[in-house]
Amino acid sequence: MSHLRLKAICIGALLLAGRAGTAAGGFVFVRNAKNDTAQIGKGELKDCYTGKTKAWKNGTSIEIALNAGGSPELKWVAGELIGASDDILLAKIKQEVFKGEMKKPVTVSSSQDCVAEVKKTAGAVCAVDADTAKSLPDGVAVLDVK
Image (cartoon, one colour):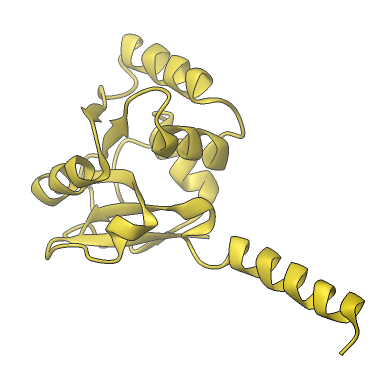
């Protein structure tokens, strides 16, 4: 096999790995397993994170759990959902909370805290690192984003 062909195959594999599944970027969204929304469009999830959508399909209120500003998880969420910085996402959320259009998100300090919050809150959604998502406890499931 030629060197160029091997290089092309390696680059292609890396590109596919970066796009595979929900874990692209090393993070995934998780939901409370009582929430029957197992799959959601990226635009729909953006509406959840920006206060436009207030309840899941089953009527349960959406509860956003966010890592602190500057965290890798929050930077990923902001980039994935709104294509901007975490500062811009936080400003948008703050504005919507102030207007009464959105419930104030719960702040978590780690992926493990995120999982704990999602487990105890029926309408909760949060972003965790892909390693944490490999061993989720009962009551927490990955939210497949399309």
